[in-house]
Structure formats: C-alpha cells, structure tokens
Amino acid sequence: MARFLRPLLRGTTYTRWLHLWVPMLFESVWLFIDMSKPWVPAVLLLPLGLVPAVRRGEGVQARFMLARGGGEAAFSISPSATWRDRWRTVLWLEVRVAMGWVAGMVTVWLPAATVVLVGAAFGTGPIHTPVVTVTLPQWACALLAPLPLLALYGSVVGLGELITAIARRLLGPSPTERLAALEERTEQLLERNRIARELHDSIGHALTVAVVQAGAARAAGDPAFTDRALGAIEDTGRAALEDLERVLGVLREAERPASSGPTLTEADRLLESARASGAKVDAEVTGALETVPGPVSREGYRILQESLTNVLRHAGSVPVRVRIEVADGALGLEVRNPLTAEIPGPGRGSGLRGIRERAALLGGRARTGPDQGDWQVHVELPLR
Figure 1 (tube, rainbow, N blue to C red):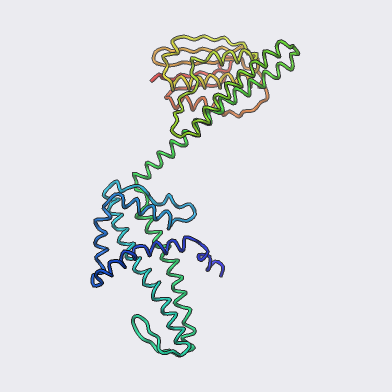
Figure 2 (figure 1 turned 135 degrees about the vertical axis):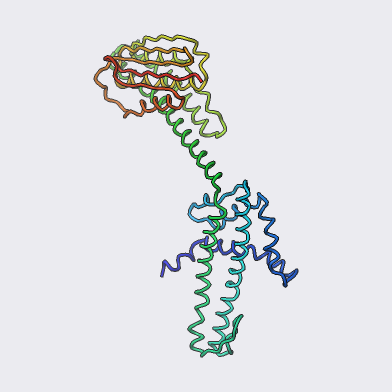
C-alpha cells in the first residue's frame, strides 16, 4: 500500500501534471475566440516549432518540471541546430498538446463522475455522464464512487511518466550535442589529471627534500649544516607554495590559463635543491633552453623535478648525472644514478607513470628502468 501511494509524495508527480496542463491555457484562450475550430492552435504550432529558440524553452521546462533524481541531462537546452532537431521539436509540441487534451478531460470529468455517483448513492437521481445516463441502485453507486478517483490517480502518474519518456526521446540531446558533451567531459578529465600531476610533482618534491634535509640535519649534529638544511627546506617550501597557489588559482578561475608554471630555464633551482639535500649532481646543458616552446619546457621541468625526487626518495645521497640537450628539433633529458637498495618511503610508481604520461601527451618517448648498473630516466620530447 505504501508503495502504491508513494507517487503522491513526489513533487514531480504534480509538476508533470502541471506541465501537461500548460498547453491547455492557450487552448482555453482560443476556445473563447472560436470554439468551433479547436484544432487551430495545433496548426499554429507547426511553424512555431521550427524556430530554433523554441527547443531551448521546451528543454528548460522539461528540466524543471519533468526531471527527477538528477535526470536534467536527459533534456537538451540548446537551440535547434539542424532540421532534424526542428522537426523533433514540432512533433513534441503536437504530442504535448494532444496529451494536454487527455489530461484536461480526465481532470475535469473523472472527479465530476465521482460527484455524480456520490449524489446517486444518496438518492438524488440517475447518474449523468458526458456520454450516457445510467440508472443504478444506490449501493452500486456507493461502491463505484471511488473508481473515478482511482482512475484519476492512475492517469496523473501514468500520463506523467509517458510525457517524460516522450520528452527524453524528442527533446534529448542530438548526436552532435552528445559528441560535444563527450569532448567537454574528456577535456575536464584531462585537466584534472594534469592538475593531479602538477600537485604530485611539486608537493611531492618539496616534501621529499624536506624529509631528506631534516633527517640529514638530525644525523649530522652540525649547527652549520643544520642551518643550511633549514635554508634549503625554506626555499623548497616557498617554491612549493607558489606552485600550489598557482594550481589553486586555476581551479578557482575556470578561464585562467594554466601556462604560468616553471620552465627548464629555472632548472638550476631543482639542481641546487638536490645538491642541498646531499645528492652529488653533475649537470650538463647543451643548446638554448630559451628556444624550447613553453608547453615542452614546462613538461620538461616537471619530468626533471620528478626524476630528482625519485632519486632522493629511493636512492638517497648518491651521484646523479643530469643531461639536458636541445638539438635536431627535440629536447633530450636524461637522469642517471647508481642502483642501490631502495630506501623505504612513500610512492608506488605513480611518479614514473606521470613521467611517461607527460612524454606521451607531447608525442615524445620516455624510458625508465635499470641500465648498465644505473637507474635511468631518458625522455625525448619533440619541440613541435
């Protein structure tokens, strides 16, 4: 019984019924003008449905009055872009008017039938319906009195579900709109992944440097070394805060470009941070880093940052060879360090996946793994 009455507690049950009644307002106005031609409004809807903006208006109404449980996306709120959309809108308007007539009839005559049956049950006379007049015993009228109300309840729920299903079919997104929505969703996912990589590389590097420096300072017991370590932690923390503020700014402002990150021209900052953490960095730069395009230079910086972070996290204070070369229309970046027993620390390979993802997005190649007794990260990125 509770399940049977559940639709009475849903707001969409009543908004859908109101949606069915809206066309009857215009029909009522026309009937005051000329009752002998009730079909005229339906004819006038034919050219109206061809107006592109009408589809948007119908979609907005459907979202507010027919949708339930987050089903707004089932209805398009874009103007008609093709003739197929226009004719679907025309068909929708005609169907809506026809179902409005049905809703109006049952709303008026079914409660009236209940009133007549109740009156007949109290002995006021025969039953008058819109079609026929039937004489029944009073007890039969009393038993039949609730049936029109049950039929009205079923009509309210059934016609509401039916008009919603038809609206999804005729006002739903066209193939072009579905493709555009899919592309937008793909762009959002790519942007989220890019921001996740930015945060991983920047914050992960800062935390790794801070942990290594703090551990080395505690083990050394040298005030001068402790001062240098604290200075390195401070500088790295400031840089990480700048990166974090930039990423949060991109998240807060959807139209803000995400192209203000550090580039390879600032690679010395990473190298000095690694040296301050105890790594013996041997760096060699060939070619003009200023000529590297912005997107390639930014991704190269992040790849170098993640590579040095992995060295500090998993190998500790070991010699590191860094080679950066700009030549033959490509950027080459190589980071090598001796293989050692892995130092326990956070991370489950997401950094290496990030390096490969960054290279692949720019059409480049990345090789990571053991090579002649060293651990190697070798990346080639095209400059175009």
